[in-house]
Length: 341
Image (cartoon, rainbow, N blue to C red; front, top):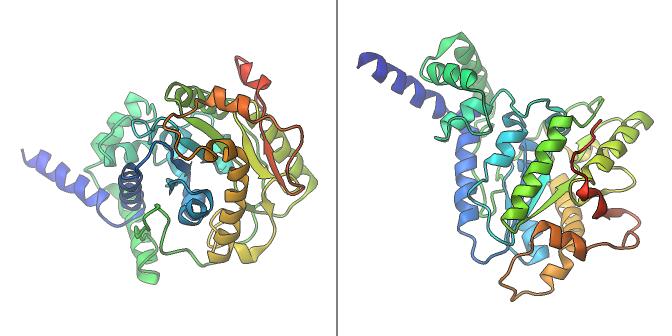
């Protein structure tokens, strides 16, 4: 009994200590609650890591599109499995699910990152994302045991919060956007990016899941602060071509969303500041308008449109803008398996 009580106190301390895991759990639950309050059959849910959380303003996009839009971004270290599975049971018929994966998420070989198992436990869904039983059992045991690793991590979190009391702020607006943004500027990333076979197949499986729910998957390239060179552009183009085998992809066709303007970014190469978020959100809204224009043109429609039927509606002969590129490819989606880089 004493052991159980000790474990329980340790567990509650970890998930409510105000640190990284506690923050991820808190904003996830708040975002889910806000999204579930939306009325009507059509919503735009924007998924991703913290680059989505600190990278788009769903409220601004909603004003442009005229339908409910929610920022569901949480943390890239949850891995692609958790990021996609975290909205299972929350998808409505007619929803448009926009996934903006950071490149580290697309490179993952098994879909399970360092926060996957602890996060599933923290939100009361242990094993979410297909965490192996052995890892889950170990994390369940350690969930109530502080240990040196946790004490060290908590100390770092504590120092961050002393320096900036809102470092792990969970203050959100009605659309799930953060109220407090990160300010520190970082150096540009050196990118050697690729798309793993696992991530490719996992996205394909998610697309099929949405099809069955009569919802639609849309992929978007992330904005990333980097030194733009020919090799990085070539790799970004290759990744985009592979993603097009899965779903529509929205991005800037000249830059592939690779940015070298430091005045747009915050404390990481994916986190944007106020200026960057405004520009990014306006661009994303314009891109989504192109993709959703037929659906948005029928405001009284009560029926959703499955991903495959949706694909048939959007096959433009050429891009509608020199700077904004919305690729919609139908025939490639018939491929049984996705050949990835």
